[in-house]
Length: 538
DNA sequence: GAAGGAATAT
DNA sequence: TATATTCCTT
Image 1 (cartoon, rainbow, N blue to C red):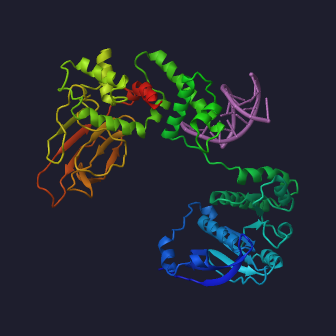
Image 2 (tube, rainbow, N blue to C red; image 1 turned 90 degrees about the vertical axis):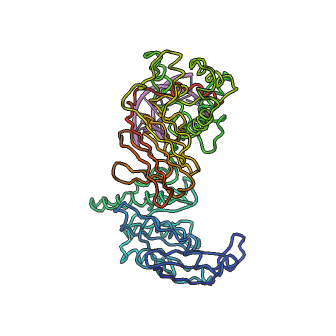
């Protein structure tokens, strides 16, 4: 499959300390995927071919068809520079003509030509470069000029290219000083890319200028010199200053909330700068905090307004809901649920008075002797008991659970206990799972989890060790393989049956879960848990 | 000039 | 919608 081309060419390049050191260069490639590697001789292993083949990465295919036929031209006197560019262009799926200028005579440069996707060849001088561009037999769309190229007046070359061809020229440099960039723009560059550059960056820049060049060609408007001034800003924006958009993860947000609370506790001013200090998160800026703080405060405000409007029936804000989607909170819930359900807090084991008992559970988490906070259904039921609110959906026909005990499925009871909300979970011994959690198989079936209005209905099918590979459920008539956790959308009310794997134990087991979910608006546990959760963080 | 915060843009 | 950026004020 792979046409392996391997050449070991020995040549010398200047090392950092200006001592000539022998290096080896290796070329591997197929017609479509040339890869070039450069190694010090000492590091080049004997089984290099094998290693390369094992480590080859599939080229990324770019779905944007407009980019596919672009041909990029670049030249340099340094193999390393071309080598990197080669990889980048290849990943962008561009065609390229990369020219290695052998002006540094005596260093044993070589000629190599990969056609089709990327071409790398040698030329002896800048004159040759300009000649290639003038005739443009290769259908070049855009030129990258590395103005740091040694042994060359690259600015002059760039200017000549600009004058003698219609091609957009992009300056590439490691020097981000405005003076340097301005000089490049004055010499005809339409944009500037600062090294080290990333794939996305070069892609965006190339794309925008090829597009604009085509438009310009149609309008027959030669670019005036005044274009350069505008381009200074463009150059800076399009290449250097492109920042990655920050995503506020649950963890990061928790850290943020914690920082805010610490500051509030210490009756300090809760200002972005201070939050930033307390969070001590590398990469985070004051602007990030400001933006997030704005959102946070708006959410609090909205929540307060809602609370005032609706009294006890606290409706959570979006902020509150989103914050709890997955993550540590659920992990803790899960852990606590296991503890809660494993006898210690069993309804039948202690007080006969369900109200008292549930209160003690809550107190135990408040006074620090018990879990930091309780599972949603415990907490919810306690809330119902205390406030005399009928738990929603307890009598609903829509939610039911039936099961038959199986030796392979421990702890699944067919009757919900008093304290377990039947509406929420038909099985008191069920363990709450993170939605879509990746939970390894282990020896006991332990979950049929919460029909959570936010997440849908999750079935965990971790099984007996006898079924280590997968567990199969039948969904209606079709077989449905479930591995670890599967999330079923809230609109899905199908029944799921456990299917005994073939050639395994003969006992059969049936578990049917029929579940219609209550409306999203009906209740939210998290709003009740919110304060406790937050205080547990500090 | 640096920071906060509301408004606005992406 | 979530996050970034701008703009105005302190």
